[in-house]
Image (tube, rainbow, N blue to C red; front, top):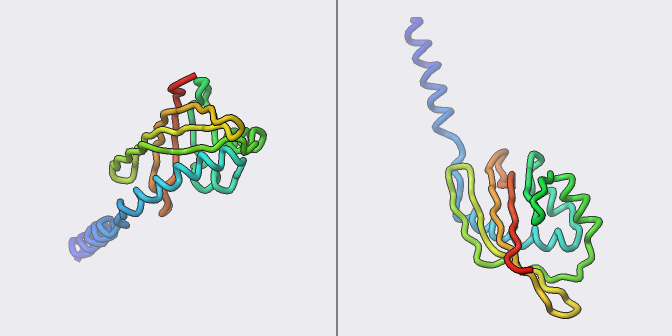
Length: 146
């Protein structure tokens, strides 16, 4: 009898483990791609709601200056620097999935609305799928031109 109950416990555990949620990578790819542009626009506009949705609470980023920053710093600085005088454009985005993780790499151009001068950055974002949502846990940016 003890063997039967142990077998049932093991079988139940295996069944629960194998019923874990399947990830729709096509939908995830579209979401991450859309979120990359939304994040750039949120930084430009100081939109903390978008940043809060996309960026995980335990996020750590590396700025263009090489400084580490967290989610709260990102929200605070985007509100302080929000001027909407730039037009951000995200392009050349590649997304690779590794189970419940994804690495997104791409470029963004920030064009001044006043005189059309621009700067281009290249970036890498690490996304994690947890609690049924994709969020950025790490990011690094590099300026391509002065």
